[in-house]
Image 1: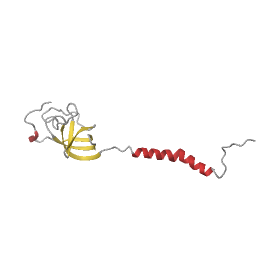
Image 2: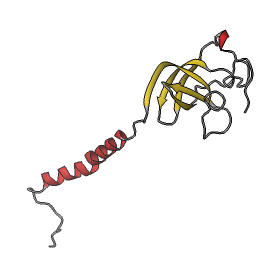
Image 3: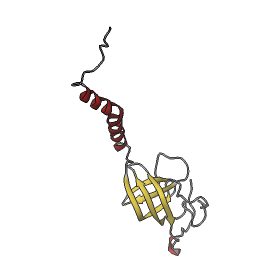
Length: 138
């Protein structure tokens, strides 16, 4: 009668069972948990902060971007703003538009080195003295 070479004797079974448990359950769980630690979003979280906002090109004179876009001043560091919270019905070139007036906004989101991703972007009313005396040029 032939004997199987792969048959484990009683002394090797506990060690083998641990290896199977580790290989099938513990190992993959450990690898996935380590992988997700590195998936934390980068940048500093900003919550309900009042900042100056306006057009990055017309008001803050940022370079490297085309056309008119929202930008925000975080303690002297002006960065472009993106995100779903930006106003969609805002008229850029109106007398109180982002190209003509720098105004306050209450913002929340994530501030990165080169941009701000807004999850909240609430424009505050324009003060009467903030209206420009003349329009801007592109």
